[in-house]
Image 1 (cartoon, rainbow, N blue to C red):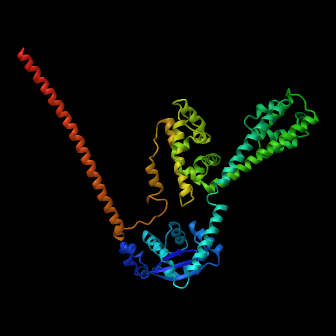
Image 2: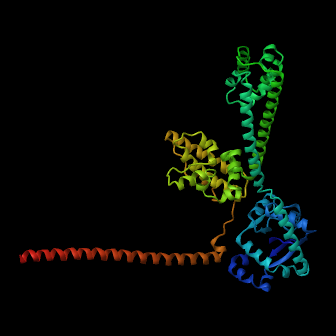
Image 3: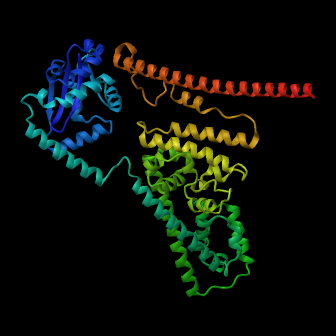
Length: 502
């Protein structure tokens, strides 16, 4: 027995489909019967109906169904009807089929179920008989629409890219202030201990922690702050060789002495700088967690911070998914692009935000443009997968990242050319889709056959027209050639006659 799950504002209904084999063979007749309520009522019959307790209950169930998950309420209703291997439940969403199959309930998703659901929606009140009145149904639809619209405006947990945009803005501000504070601290403390800057090159946070631990070089030599300094070594902030270099440099340092009030000001600045480093790390972890929810494949391909910057620059994951690769490549370099176009300069920018991506920043300057173009093409695909895809795994982004690294190696060495995109896609999705999409047989869909035959006729007509046009063009060319040859022959004859006359 075949059933169909249908959700409405009034409740969850399960309809049984009569004579399913005959219905499946005559899809064209089914489409014509949708307009006739009497004929359609002979095909389906109400088997079960679960009424919602209120608008909040209806909104929760409808929101879960839209996300492709089956709530407990719907699961209990379906389990009470569908019993045994011979019974299946039809759905109109591919994700619901996956969720029901995972719950052990045989589900079916096809174009036939979509057509039957369209007919149920059209004749819902007639099929429900006395269970739902028109006034009740209209009030339920209005209340559910208002509540779901309010919930969608207030928060959307699947596409919460606004949080990432604001988080990236705060991260950029903290990063800029951290660099400014550190440069000020390093310049200020170098009057007292200039050798420390040369020992800890490109280790900013370690430098700040060392300043807070030793305070002054005199206290380090006397052993007053030796315990705090040794704790940095035991915590793994830096190694024993670096600690020994700092001790040796403190004994031979040529820096000036610091008074108590100067030391107090320097340590206060160091504490503020260290708190900014901690804030920067906390924001990095926050953005990593948020971007893993919103765009997991893009985050794997680019990295957490570059992916967050790109989404913020594009205005959201949906805008990024709609952008072509050429636009993604120059995001962040709009001023340079328009400046070069205004000056009629051929040297347009090759990358914007993508310059911070590890694939672009680490390659040679000769290959940066090509790598940025390939990376933008990969981002255009991963963004579409993250925005519109059903699954949230990262194998798509990981595969594109490995292929891009192989391409970069090929640019450097010239050996081992990378695989083609079609080979990679067929390896990831052998069926040609990211999920198992049901494919109808040609015998089960005469409407599709009619459409395909119609398309074939149209293609034949178009080909005939194109052939006629090509033949006309060829005839014109041949006529022109013949006229030219005839003209040449006539001229040569006239020349011969003139010579004979002379």
